[in-house]
Each structure stands twice: as C-alpha cells, then as structure tokens.
Image 1 (tube, rainbow, N blue to C red):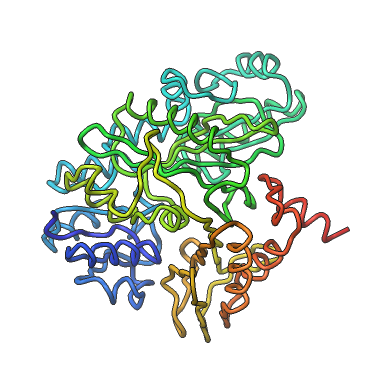
Image 2: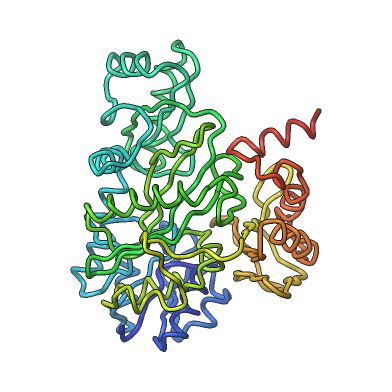
Length: 457
C-alpha cells in the first residue's frame, strides 16, 4: 500500500478521499489555495500545504506546484478527485515521471477518452452503439454541410475535448449551421484550448444514463450498474439515482456486457464512467467516458455496498478485484448486484430560480440525518463559500428499499437541511421531489425546462 497520498483537489471530494485514506491507514496530504486556508479538508488531512493564490489556474491547476507539494511532503501517490487535473493526461504523465503513482487510468487511456471523436471511434470499433455522426472532427464548411444533410436536422455540434455543455450547439435549420459551427469552435477553443468539434444526430428529450466501471491491473473489469442523470440544467447534473427507473434487468445485462468487452479491448484500469444517451425507444448510445471518480458516485456506493474511492486506491496499489469488491455481490454477467434504490441531490450555492452563484458566509447550518441518509460536504457554520470555484457545497444522498421510499426519504431530508446566509438549490430539489412526472419516473434531460415553463404559465 502507499506510504502517503497527496489529494490534488479541494472541497467535499478532498474530504471524501481523506476518509478513504484514514480507513485504509494511509496518511494524507491536502493542498489548498489561500482562499481555502480554513477549509475542512485542510483541517482533517494529516498534512497540508498551500500551493498558491485563490484562482485555480494559480493553485489547483498549477502542475509544478502540486508536484512540488508531493515531493516536499514525501508522498508517493496522488489522487486527483474530479474536475481540475483529474482528466489531464499531461498531469498523469508528470506524476509518473516524478515517481508518483497517479490514482486513475494510464495517461494514454485518459488522452484517448478525453478526445471525444477518438473515443467514439474506439468504442465503435469495439462494438459499442454510437449516435450516428461524423467519423472525426469537422474543419471544413463543405464537409460540415454534407454530413449534416446526410444526418438530417436537427444535428448537434460538440467539442471534441471537454464537456459541461461548452462548445455545444443544437442546429435545427441549415441556415444556422455554419454560424453555430463557428461559435462552437470559438467557445471550445476558449474553454479547452482545443477548437475541434464534431457533428452527430440530435436526440430530442433523451435520458442520460451512465455505467460505473472498475478495472484492476490484472485484466479484470466489472461494472456496478447504472445511474440515471437526466435531471439537468444547462447540461449540468442536479439529481442522480441508481438504478434507473427506465432500465430493465435484460437491458442492464446486455449493455453491461458490451461495455466490459469494449473496455477490455482498450485495457482500461481503475474507476471510470461510461456515459450513454437513451432515446424514446429505449435504445442506448455511447457518448463519452469520464476517466475519474464522478460527483455522483455515492448513489452507486449506496446500492452496491462498495467504497469506490477505497477501490480506486487499492487498484492503483495493485490489489485484485476480489479484494476490491469486499461487500459487493458479483453476478455471473460481470455486474455487481444492486440492492434498493438511491438518490443524490447536489446542493449548490446558487439562486434556485435564476441559478446565479451565491458565494458568501454560511451563518447557520443543520445537516439532516436518520436511517438511510448521507451528506458529503465541506460546509460548516461560519465557513465562507469562495467565489472562485464550483458552486457545489454538499451532496445529499439517501437509500430506500425501493424508489418510492427513496423519494419520500429525500423529501423529508431536504426539509431538515438548513443553510442560512446564502442561497442554495434546496427549494428547487424539493419541488422536483414532489413533481408527479419525477415521481412516475417520466424524466429526460429537458425536464427542468418543461417544469420552469409550466410554472411560468
């Protein structure tokens, strides 16, 4: 096992990794910016070192500073969490050349899956269904027009690197095609330093479903079922649940086996998430893969009884899948058995009506508890939510015997979740939990838009 792990992140995920390290008996090192000097991950880590000013480009994204912190503290492994440097293949390579174990996939796999057009092609060659679209990036207007006409409108222009809705345009008319393509390229270049885009058929009102996977260094890969992530606004997830109310055991088995075969072909290791879109006929298509732990990983932990962060660390240290899956029940189809139903609400520091960020001091805080309730957070009373980073301040996760119980449990937990001093997304989550379409499981990525339109009407 590792001598010491440096956590190249902040907030709740940094605390989550610290918890896993403590349970494994591994000392941890927190890095922090000047804005996070009083953050809980700094307090609970065994060591902490400041790596720069508040701006993430000067601190959490500063690779030399992070590597120096690991060398100064004598760490021998780095956990990147999610966001920041977690899917940066150059960072993973620098870790390796510096004698540090990067707790994640190999750099070449991160690079392959990080370039969406290459990832699509690799998965297509491995037999995964993909949404019809261009075979690669589009860099000529004539090619763009020909491919769009062949696919039929509407089409979706997407950045080849990055995500989160940036560098993405829905084009419903041919006369909007070139201007949308140019706008997507410009936005992608500014956001990711890579202006490449590709085109695919647009699926209206899809469901967003993803499969959690784990691969050890001995050639064995398993999947831990799916998560439904269709409740989104501006392409950012708000609520996740496992299992999906739309998934059948037969479809889970078939898609799970396809995913495992595809990942075996590319030699995937550590934790990852295969993201899919489901159309109105229930057909699933590969869209991308995240080569890291996900924000929503707790819902999978709740229904499988497997600590995914500890699994990441153990796999990076060379443990085989039998040791990693302690507590989980593995089926013959390569999937871990799912028990009960879990839902996660992302509690963001933002206005629930306008989604405008709401940084500031939390003057009072009460976290809900009780049977089947979990809260992952770095927030505490009198703490300051900085303006420099993502608005996520907590994740409220519940587990029930079935989906109905999980919804009821989440509703009462949200009522008991008190945050004063800033706006949060809690009121929005409460409305969603009581919405008849959500309760019935009739959801898709346009759910929030329809809900807002009905409220205005």
